[in-house]
Each structure stands twice: as C-alpha cells, then as structure tokens.
Image 1 (cartoon, helix red, strand yellow):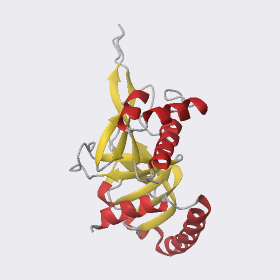
Image 2 (cartoon, one colour; image 1 turned 30 degrees about the horizontal axis):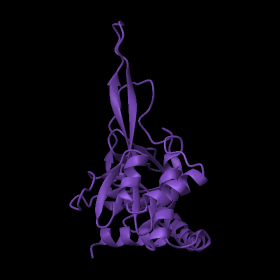
Image 3 (cartoon, helix red, strand yellow; image 1 turned 120 degrees about the vertical axis):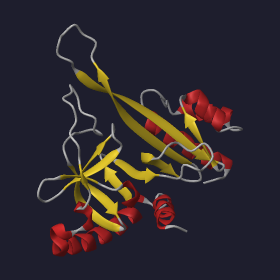
Image 4 (spheres, one colour; image 1 turned 90 degrees about the vertical axis):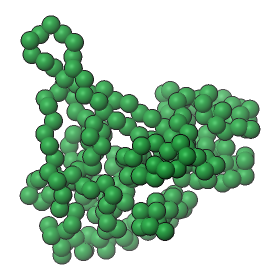
Length: 238
C-alpha cells in the first residue's frame, strides 16, 4: 500500500470513531507536534515550495470562505502542524501556507495528507483511475462510512459585461458532489439523482427525508450526510 493510500485509509478509518475518541487522539498528536515544531522553527519542510503568483484585481476573492490565512490543523508529509496558517485557492486548486517570514507558499499537493480548514476535512484526491472518478484536486470529505461523499468547490475568473473602458473581473463558484458506492464514483446533482443511486431503498429514504424535513437545495451537505447514513443503516452496510 502506498503512503498516500495508507493516509486516505486512515482518514476514512478515523471517520468511524466517536468524536470524543477522535478529539483525544488529535490532542495527543497536537501536543507532540507543537513541541517538535517549536524546536524545528522555520526549518520545517512545510515552507519549501513555490511562491504564489499574483491574482488580477477582482471584485471578490477566489479562496475558500476567506482570503485571510486561517489557523488550521494540517498534515503534510505525515507531520502534523496543529496551528498552520493556511488558505485554499479555489481558482488554481492550490493550498497555501504563510511562512514565518510572510511568504505565500504553494504546498506540493502530493505531500498534503489532509487539512482541517473552515470546518472542512480536506485532502488531495488523486485516485483518478477509479471508475467514474473526478479529476485530481482538493476535496472535502463529508462522510466516510461504507459509502464516501466528496465535495469539490472551484472558482472561475469572469469579466463583467459593461460599457466602461476599464475591465472588471470577478469569480463565480461551482460546487460538485461525488458519491463513492460499490467500487465506483457517481456525481450527485440533485435529490432525484441521489435516490436513484441508492436503490433499492428509494421509498424508505423518501419517507426518512420527509419525516426529518431535509432540504437538498438549502442544506446540501447535511442532506447528503444524513441520507447516506440512513441508507447505510437500512441496508446493513454501516
């Protein structure tokens, strides 16, 4: 098993533990990691990489949630950085860290094990040879039971259509969801598509959705996670 495959396996395995167990394990790892990083200071391999290229001036930013660097829990080359200052560029598919001397460093994606950023557990997906697999990139892992749910967000640079001689640019955002079930990936575009993918339990799941007042469009992440968990429960796959 390759190092990357092992790390992805561990991510999915940790997802099966209780939140209390995960918290205890993470606290123990974080204490040791902080001790090590205090000794290593800025000699860490984390700060060796390419400098970020500049973006054009736009009316909004292309980063996940915030354009500010945010204190995050990052695993890079199997080393835990509990307080790394990180941001994710959705337009260039780049995870960036700010160094102690304030340089914006683009992390090598194959070295990123995972990062917990803005409430998302994000890793670099590169198993593109799996059936139906999406393209390589950073994905949020929403659920890791017998089925997996991945979320991918991207930003695209657009030009404003106006009569001004000065060109204005902005970013539009796209979110896609992928379900890994029975050895293959499927893109999930709506509630109907999800229920079709979860046959033969469509009727039971529709009753569950209705009884719990779940709304796909308004709360997509929660809808997908709760529906998949119920599917695993009634199908005996949990």
